[in-house]
Structure formats: structure tokens, C-alpha cells
Amino acid sequence: MFKKFLGDYEFIWGPVKKGVCESSYYHFLTSSEELHELDITLGYKTRNAMNAAKGKRNLYEQILIMERIAGTHAFAASLSYCLAAEDYFGLTGKLPDCVKLIRMFFAELERLRNHIENLSEISGSTYLEVPSSLYAYYAEKIKQISSEIVFSRYLMGINTVGGVRLYNLSGREFIMNNSNKNNAFTDDKAADFKRFEYIATEVGSYIKDIEKIIKQNSETKSHIDRLKTTGKINAEIAEKLHAEGVVAKSAGINRDLRLKHPYLLYKVLALKPVLYNDGDALSRYLVRIGEIRQSFDIIKICFEKLTKNMSKQHIDDIHEQGKNIGDTGKLQHDMRSIYNYGSSGSGNNSRSDNFSGSNNDDGNSDEHTGVERNLFLSGVPHNKYGFGSVESSEGPIFCITGGFDGKIFKKINIKYPFENNFRVFKHFTKNTMMMDFNINETSYNFSVAACDK
Image (cartoon, rainbow, N blue to C red):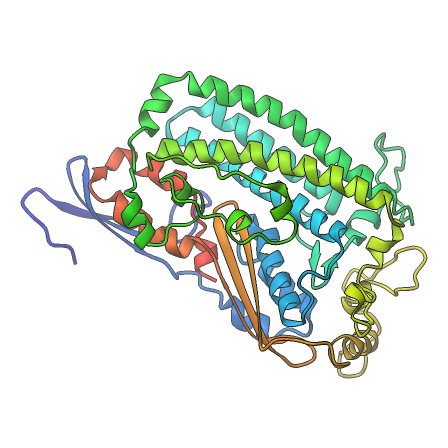
């Protein structure tokens, strides 16, 4: 209970809300326009995802769980899991550069899409409905391209332990003029890189239009005035509360794993942090704009490096990257087989839609069991625990894995940045104006689903 004074009153919002808002309970104490106290309760739709992951049959099914905790961060979450698993098995640094580039390409595409979507929400909170709709339109276009190319609007099904699943890219022939009406399965692996080029080109055209919208918004005084000084963060307190991602960067706190603890090939890019010092909603808005441009530059660099990388080796190498990875001599492993995604010798890249493979009476795949024995029980060095960390659009996602029993990890946990940023939000939203609450909330861009895991 809040301590109330004369003229104060309490009201609640949630956990049931209109539209598609996630289930969270907000308890307000206010007098007139000023918000004095705020209490947030989560956990109304906790799904026990970690326990569900421990009950799966193989690593592929565990990845499915990681991707579906919070759909908007599916790729970053699955990547953190894969990096943790690779750390456990001693594979960190042993993957080919082409795999790292592909992972970076899609990680930045997810970041870019999420930031554009949030610009739509922030614009809507200041009642600029036309720009809000335009931002949402381009975010949707990126989702449609993702669906067209990798058959997932949220980039699910790409990451695997030890590499990437390129069946999503090469399983169906993609013809620019759509002349292949039957979407027949083919073995044209070279077409994969046309798809990367297609994504980069299309997204580049969207960025040009988005920058026009940004320019128009910057000239809209009412929009800028509503964002400026709203929800201002004190950097010292934000440090103590461990603010993450955009929230930290808006207060001048340089927290970005891509710079501080680089993974994949981020170290060679020499990234510069996108930082602002005012710590208000406008700063959070500007950080997102800067990161949209930065992410698109990284996408272009990844495509260029990927093209050069693949010109030096056979295109088939990336499809066979699960075999003998990193000269360990012990990792005899076809990634397509371990996930029951069709026979490694299949010439037509066919697969079973239910990923079942050839099953024993107990429901386990013969092929899957054999591959696991080769991969995990042949003396491949591993650590007691594996640790993976990825910088998502909202901050770091950490994953820890351990207790591998030959099929799955029995010890697994994942942490999202929202768990820290909720505390920052609660602290700095006090003593602000109630009419600015929606601006504050959208500029933080929470995922309740990521907390209610």
C-alpha cells in the first residue's frame, strides 16, 4: 500500500488491457497530473519456459523454446543459446567466418526491424498517427521479406548449435521474377547469396524512405517538445540499477556487448557507440535512429564480406560446415542430420515437415542418436558450463547451459535486459506527468513476455 496524502488517489491498469497489450499490473498513486508512485507486477502468464526446455528430446527442440519466449527477439535469444552451447563444447572461435557473417546479418536485421517498430510506437504516443503508420508499414515489409526468404517473419529456425540451418534459404528456389510458380525444391545453393543481396537491397530502399519520415518528424515541434525532458534518467542512479541497451545509452552509459565484449566478427568492424547524454525520451528516440543507420551499415558490410568470403571457397562448404568443424578431428557431425532435417546425402534437400526422421519404437530417431554419439560422446572437449551473450535491440541477452546428458542440456537459463530496465522505469517514472506515461513506456519498449518466461 502507498502512503497517501490529502488529494492523492490510487488507480490500477491491467493486467487485462485492450488490444494486444501484454499482461502486466500497474498500480498508480497520483494527485491531479503528477505521478507520485508506481508499482508494477508481472508474472500473470509465466510459462516456465526453462523447465519446458529441459524436457525436450534434442538441442533443436530446445532452440525452438528459446526462440518463442519473446518473438521480437527470437534470433538474438537463439543465438545466445547457440553461443552458450558452443562454449560448452569448446567450439568458440572455431566456426567459419561465413557462419559468423550470416549470424551478424540476421541479428542486425532483427535489431533494425525492432527499432523501426518502436519508432512507430513512440510517434503514436505523441499522436502523430501518419508517421506512426508509415514506420509500422516498413517494419511489416521487413517481416514480409523475412517470411519470403527464410519462411519466418521473426527469423526463427536459422540458428543451430555449430552453425546455421541453410535449408531455410536453399530449400526452395527463389526466383526474382517469380517464374517458378510451383516453388519446387532445388539444389541451387548459389541462389542463397542472391537472397542476401535481395534483403540488403530491399531494406536499403526502406531506409531511404524512413529517413525522410525521421526528417519530417524532427521538424514537428510538438513531437520533439513532448519527448524532450520526458522521463529523464540520472546516469549515476541508472548505473546502480544496471540500465541496459537503449535506456543506458540515452544517459551516456556505454553498454553494448558488440563493443565491450565483441563476439562473432564484431571486433573487426570497429563500431562506435550511439550515445546521448540527456537520458530523456528524446534521447532514447535518437539512439534508436542512430542504431537503425548503424545496423544497416553492418548488414551491407556483412553481405560484402560474405560475398568475398564465399568467393574463396566452395559454396557447398557452408552447407557442410557442421562436419569436422575447426580441425578438432573429433566432431564428425552433419548439422542437417542431428536436427532430423533430412538425410545428409539427400540430393534434393527434401525434409520431413514434422522433423521426425526414422524413429525407433521409443520415439527417438535412429539417425539423431547416431549423430549425437559421434558429436558429443567421442571426447569433444567441453566446459562444465557454457556461457553465451548477445546484444539485442534492447540490450544484452545472456544464456547459460550445462549438464549435457548426451541429448539436451539439463541446466539452462536465459536473461533478458527488460528485467533490469523495469526497475529503471519504475524509479524514474515517479514524479513525472501522468499524461507522459505512454511516452515513457513506449520509449523503454518492454517485452513482458521476456520477463514472464
